[in-house]
Amino acid sequence: MIPKIVFLTKGVGVHRDKLASFELALRDAGIEKCNLVSVSSILPPQCKIIPKDEGLKLLSPGGITFCVYARNETNEPNRLISAAIGVAIPKDTGIYGYLSEHHSFGEVGKKAGEYAEDLAATMLATTLGVEFDINKAWDERKQIYKASGHIFKTTHIIQSAEGNKDGLWTTVFAAAVFVEYA
Image (cartoon, rainbow, N blue to C red; front, side, top):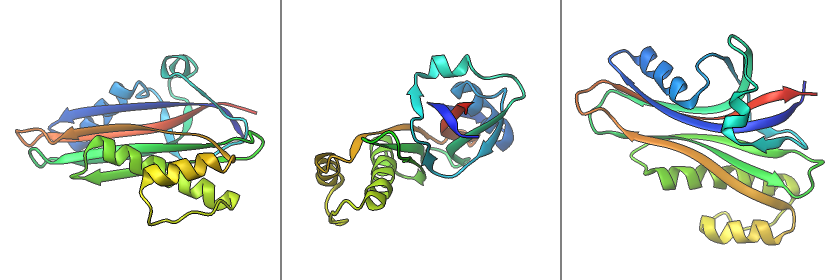
């Protein structure tokens, strides 16, 4: 089973019960009808990223659905939480890329998303033998990765939220969802 298609999605949920908050985040992401199976971080060779609305049409209620996902939750009022998925796609579509998951507290969405993207790109770069200084800023390394000619594209999806002011559970969720298999 090798996924041929993947899509990115995200959601947030708020409820007095932790599990119900997670369910509402899945509903917001559009994948509540699936039985999610978390897998690690490999984007298969030639796996095409499609828009969320197209991907949702390919899901079946109750289906076993493989994905890489990040989830975070809090019931602390106003606590900032984030969940992000980073993507790094190699120029050579015959080799695999990387997906990364990142979840954090107190980190704005932009920073959490860039961190996840950086993590995926760094994993791919090290696999491809691209030389870089890990201490350089993400923007500098991103340019080095792209200039190497090995990395075609990097991106991310992020969901962040502040904990509900009344102490209800708040859940954030982001995922790369695999939908068709060879």
